[in-house]
Image (cartoon, rainbow, N blue to C red; front, side, top):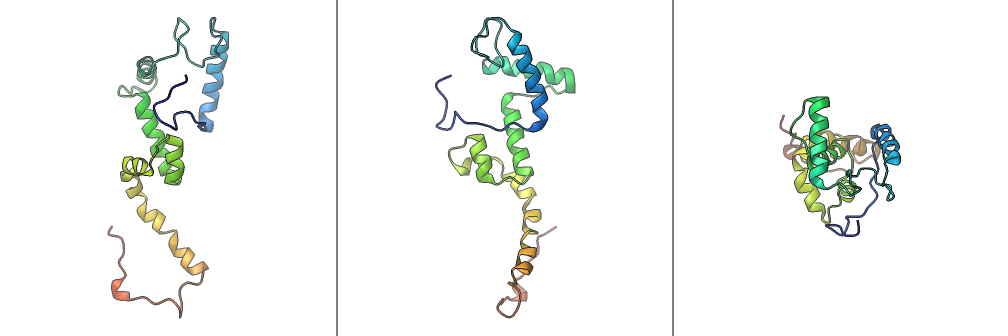
Length: 152
């Protein structure tokens, strides 16, 4: 695979630990396959790279069989991965790089609803900062009338 869709198409992507046993198992299967000189992890019966439709058809088969989920694709798994990264508290710029988005705006626009869900939780992190850094006191001027809490 020499040509990629974007400038960041070729990159190293870390794999979550829980997937490692499945990948090791697939590596064992791939190593036993004949006509796999390129050491492909997944290949078609005639030794070719798997195309998107082949991968999506296999995902649909597995997810229907194992989880009774019928609406699945490699793109939906990619989006789920990005969502879980944001939900775990990963910095959006790191998610941007992992997802291969050239512009941070793509990441932010794609996962805005997820980011909104964590706004209050993230804001709570600033309170200890003010206390620990002694920012509250004689030198900290504020107008109580202008303090607003998050709407609940």
